[in-house]
Image (cartoon, rainbow, N blue to C red; front, top):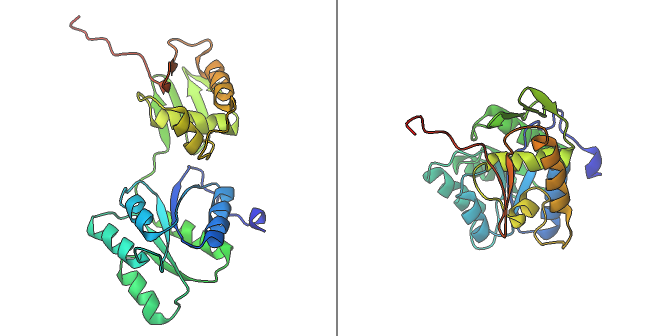
Amino acid sequence: MLATVTLATPPAVLMRILVIEDDADAASYLVKGLKETGYVVDHAKDGRDGMVQAMTDGYDAMIIDRMLPFADGLKIVGAMRASGIKTPVLILSALGHVDDRVKGLKAGGDDYLVKPYAFSELLARLEAMLRRGVGPQVETKLRVADMTMDLLARTVVRAGKDIDLQPREFQLLEYLMRNAGHVVTRTMLLEHVWDYHFDPQTNVIDVHISRLRQKIDRGFEPALLHTVRGSGYCLRGPEPVDPAE
């Protein structure tokens, strides 16, 4: 069962993985397992969509099926490398001959796993790629005004005081801090914090924002979490004072 398979060292920092897989069942199994392990996962269902998402260079690692409609997996990897994108890539393929594996690695893949595979082995290979550090460097601390979030220790401190957050509140605050100074819409929060690609028509966001505001703003000055009427929410510190004024 997927729920019983975990990494030896689960990711302490939220890491974003792109899965490009056209087989619906295989993709569902893989995405579900990665999310249960603690990764943030995006999925592209064919080579065309995969090419667009892969070229954004916003991922810590990618898992790419070799045989895809519209664009072969090796073509996607080759285009990434030609554009200077160094994100580590694990290639999945039913083609398991030595020549096939060599082609995958020469195309720019960092590892090559033959189908069918054991999920535990895929996780171990993914962890090894991330540990080698060939992908983008991951921040371990975020700061907005006098509030600091330690992504490794999973702690939040404001003005020297510890703030106790539930897991979802921590994830919500992390997303807001990563986008500090910018308006974050409800749709963005649903997709990136709750992994919903539709609006469930509930007040789940309002409830969590209210709880988070009570914890990070109550008893502190100035308020950091602001509601932007008709748009969403914005986490921002006080405007700097011009000494010339």
